Length: 409
Image 1 (cartoon, rainbow, N blue to C red):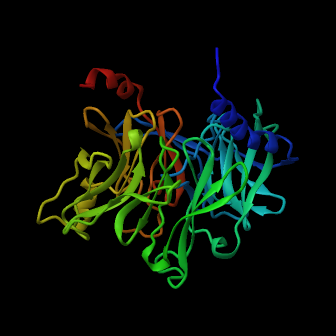
Image 2 (image 1 turned 60 degrees about the horizontal axis):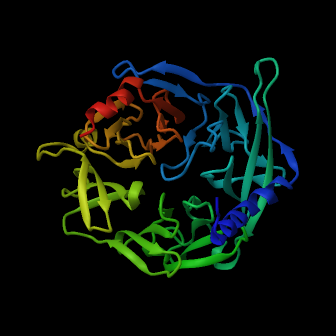
């Protein structure tokens, strides 16, 4: 079998970070006892696992980021508890781990697509952290051992010193995207810069620069095209750039009377988003799919609207965040009442997976911003069902998975 030279070079380039991190020294991480709680949603039968039940607020990573390690051995989240910050839930034992380097904690994290590591920012450094997990057979008697290795990718300095968005990895694992500088009403006089960071060599490339007051974050690489990066500004609902040329590939432009929010990359270079044509505060918001190459938008999950409805009533029937799994089977969405809907990507049938994880109007409870596992079997979200913010995962009932083929057109 022949392997062409470009392929060999690509393999060598992408394997360089693996070699570098394997040579870094190991350090032990603190492992905490289990605090998870399992129950079944009484209406839907979905299995719920509250990864955290601590009185402090615990929240999953944003729906645009990967929360699960590549081998699904740990789920990352953030905590407001004392000495909290970035933490992990061990799926084998239920124990929790403080993800903290001896020189400081981590932020702005996302898990790597194909390696058992995560990317984060520590101080002014962008780093990759590899986890070595040795699960205990009896955690109550002897806790699991978790050790980490850290590789510094680059330092953020000057105009790049102030990150304002989670890191995002491109589909080849070759570079990271990040927003830095001003954002909206935060430091509006400071320019915003969208940058690309080479994972192998730490090189930084400017993709876009705009006034901070005009920039709204949501920096994301495409799940399938390594060269497409999107972000949100006040000039359009979302802007897509080619990181090689810095040219704008697509602007999702404003249409009078339309409301759009929370674009998220999906399969075949499409993006999901939520929106409709009755603006806030009494908006309708369908789950929609944008095929920007063909300039087509279609409704995948229907919302609802009627003229007499209050904002609270409409919020029960419309969506706010939506994210499609990379296998193309499902799209998951949430609303302001903490209801989680699962949308069959071919038939568009909507299942209600679980309900009531947020009290409408209770601002101190985080929005669910629901995201996916690696296998398309579980979703993760912030839940207020137990009284304060906890990280919860819901498992899709096997019968719904089995119905997929029979319902496909």
